[in-house]
Length: 81
Image (cartoon, rainbow, N blue to C red):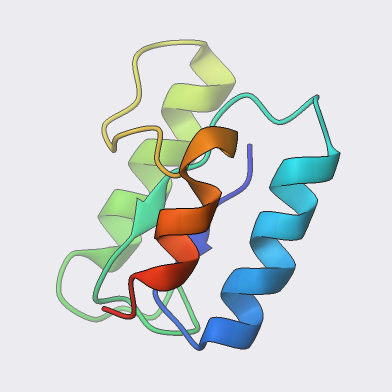
């Protein structure tokens, strides 16, 4: 699993390069409005991150969409939200 927080386009490029090159990545939850640190105690960010990791480890459906996928990399990089 590769978790991606909303952050600078440079970090998005690093994360999507890993996603594109590593076929072992099964899930890629994207956490918008989180910034550079997923576990930051703000709002419900910790709960979202915990739920995503727990679902992955339990092999249960993810609470966050599996986005971006490998096919979503170009539009994900173009989207500057």
